[in-house]
Image (cartoon, rainbow, N blue to C red; front, side):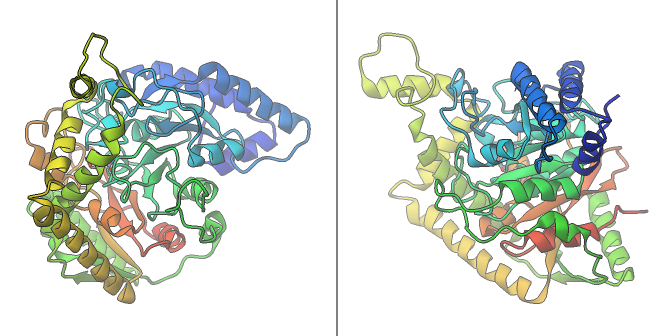
Length: 479
Ligand code: GLN
């Protein structure tokens, strides 16, 4: 039987002929079918993935070298364009829409030898924290099917958690990679804003969005990052800073002592599960005992970051989603409407789901003439202050540690009636998107309720290398 542990071991097996790319694809297709009830994949690219595996196997048989991601089976969130394939942002608005081009991140994976096996379920337009806002129905957490997988990249997280592909791509605007990784007990990385091109990623909030990675371990995360990172002529916000050899850096000996900060208000926050809070502090003690410095810093802005995030992202969303009018893109109501405004209203009313409509309305409101300064300008000022504070923190510390989410994976329906509780899910993750820094969720803890959860680690902008390297020193918590 095919067993996957890491890209490196898979490549060793390919080299000594103990496995094939085709065998891997066949295994995953069978697993996706067997675990269909999880609803992680919206669609598989079956015949195409098999055909590509055969080509990659033939390359090896002909004596050609392994490509960097030779035969690596990847699932992609349904917000990433892949030429000639459907992409719908899990929305009825885009049902039946085919990408005319590929996202840069996807194209780089393909060029490096990866096999894209299908597209993954998520919250509609990446708006949500539980995958309950998908037009295709929710994805189930593989650990406990009564619980959510997190969101918005729930399908991408479960696909890796349940062994339906080797690694997957998601997107993270306010935590959509890190929080589902936390809920599913895997690694989830949101790179710095600008580290990976957003070209071909369906926009939610353009100054926050970033493509992220789900994997079972740090080495695979590093490998995928070094392939997809880098400048891009199609995205002026993608940084052309050189891309370090992250995998190589992970092989270097571990440093004995790092300087970690944590936010006092974060571990004391009333929304945080008391067991997570207690364990977090115990973990900090273990780190101190191991020779690290772990210090509390004051972060009085904590209560403002969720409102700031929702003001700014809904404003950006209301602008970004304006293009889905049923004329240029998207669902078009069949009927004989003659008034253009009515036609647009009809298409949008029937195409978008509730949460998306709510955010478009909220965004239009915070941008409206009478309220612009009170909401949008104010939120931008808070964002600036956060960036300034972040710089100060990283003058004295290598990384910030925090819980990834205030609770473990919750039950379906538990938070749908209370939008504030749902939005508070983002309290620890939106900070990295507001400031543009990278963040990773590491699966280090088990809760007494039987669910896994993570530790979030954040470093300064474009410091993915030190983020990965110091993450390696953070071992699972032993109670
Ligand atoms: N849960 C957050 C939201 O609903 C984050 C979404 C995301 O990162 N795409 O906006």
